[in-house]
Length: 332
Image 1 (cartoon, rainbow, N blue to C red):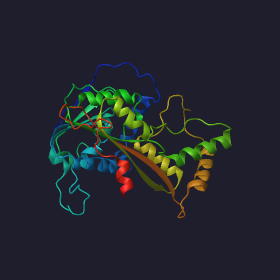
Image 2: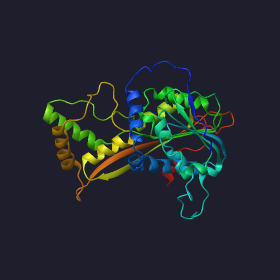
Image 3: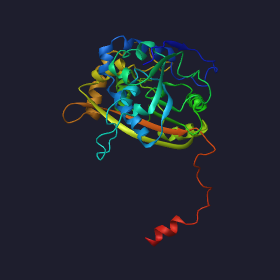
Image 4: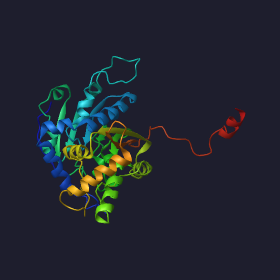
């Protein structure tokens, strides 16, 4: 494992046109979460699970990756997933080698140094060549064009203000015919909490403030990848439902994950006790399970895009086919 400690500062690309999130507040949340390593590890269940599902997509790409970048690495959840034994979920392949054997170097890039180095002494570091880079901000990637054979990102891009610009940067640092594989929260994530908070606030205060961050919809992601110049796109969605004993535990876990709200213009300070109690009652009434637990839905958007290459497979021009699909279906 590389023990290099470096802070990379890229050329500023200027402020994005729209600022939705307070990036410094998000950095502070991650730093505070990492300050309690035991609790931070206990609440890594979502990032760890998605990292496993994300890295499984590499099983379909039969090649070696000399240099891989993990953008927004958090606590290196992707690295832990890469070294897992028998990663292939196919029951006909009970014995498979870790995906890390196909990677020469993993560059884990993250703005929160405390979170990035939280698990630097754990055993998984000895099973993969990891170089940790502390970024000034994940929205500015200070890497040379065509310098990586694979770029991955696990549950960090939903906090990016300039998502189109960041995707364009990722495409730029990929070598030709090399993929970007990412996962981000989107769509109806935490819709149960969102609706119950809105109703509770409307009931107790006669109005609403943004309590849950806005998220990209799956229909938008394909267009963003295309505008960034990616080819051969794949976008799919997976809902992960986690049951909690109450809304207080859910909110505590979100805080320990470093996933609390950082919308610009949000109401500062803790939510009042009165509002929290009303939210608990409404959440339980609208969404509660029969066993008394409360479900929370995390909608995961997975995306794959390839840097264009002259040798890459391309779709045939529209109308160039020899057979009419309508005729085939009518014959059946």
